[in-house]
Length: 250
Ligand code: NAD
Ligand code: ZN
Image 1 (cartoon, protein in one colour):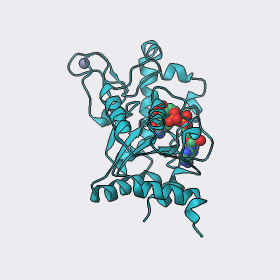
Image 2 (cartoon, rainbow, N blue to C red):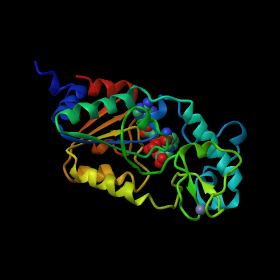
Image 3 (cartoon, rainbow, N blue to C red):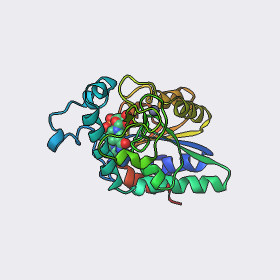
């Protein structure tokens, strides 16, 4: 009897085995089992009455830089207190294995945490920027990662304008280089693994759609149905920390 015909995990493993160029496209669910609060879940305690649109928009920043800086400083400190989960580690391990055979695993993430990097992955694209990529709001000069944890809100040592969080806010352009790399990786991959994203944030969600239109097989890892489930060649129902090790283990 051939289990691979009926068992989704086996079918997905066959796809992973056969692929030479894998793109892993991740969202907030990737880091859920590391204990990183979603945006909304983090609106507790002193932040309870704050509006996410204010905390994640250029207008909110203009209105109260100190408050918005303090919010991202807390997010950065929270991320520092967490560790990559078994899913992040499995992706890094899979990349090492594929590299041996001349293949590759490229990580394209919507997450602003650094857990892929801390698990040993090279991230090809941080589509929504990063908590540890603070920069000057005026001259764009990048600051070292730990400046994200500084209080009070620091000013640019060169031009004196304010340092801002390195995340992409609503209405802002995605970082051009990251977007180009993500687009290129999507066009040249032979398998896309979509992990822990609701698939409703654009233009990021266009990437799996482009892969789908190109006929590239897609594996989704998500405990729930997402806007991208309909695109998946093999939808795997479950969590990143459970399923990714099972998918990558040989
Ligand atoms: P989302 O919150 O819209 O969707 C999360 C998805 O993950 C859902 O489909 C959910 O079913 C799934 N999920 C939940 N637990 C999971 C698990 N254990 N394993 C696998 N999947 C799981 O997240 P999004 O699609 O990334 O979009 C939200 C935006 O918020 C993004 O732009 C992102 O930049 C930002 N964000 C980032 C972080 C982070 O960096 N860790 C956290 C929160 C929000
Ligand atoms: Zn400056």
